[in-house]
Length: 106
Image 1 (cartoon, rainbow, N blue to C red):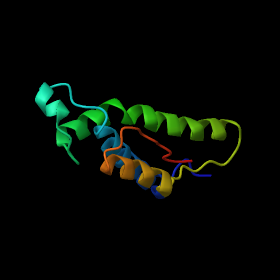
Image 2: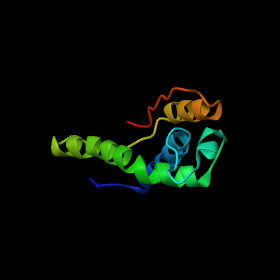
Image 3: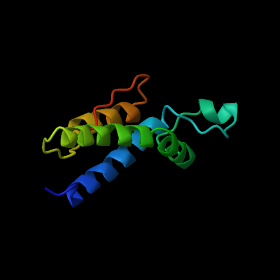
């Protein structure tokens, strides 16, 4: 059994980009003024980079831990993204919803 495959790597990259975009609306870069923090936009590179640095490692390691624990117990494990869960998070981000729902993968 291979440890990983190209589809899992693609799924992880899609997950990283989607989660960083979703969280960029909730986690703001600390080098902004108060006026910039109150302005709501659909996309900001600084917020995207900061959300990637802060939140994505935790989510990535969490999802990989599921795979490693399953392998340790002798089960076959493949990481897959749940398109509806990611799509729902992106939709909530696009409509600037005050709450967040994440269900990125299994």
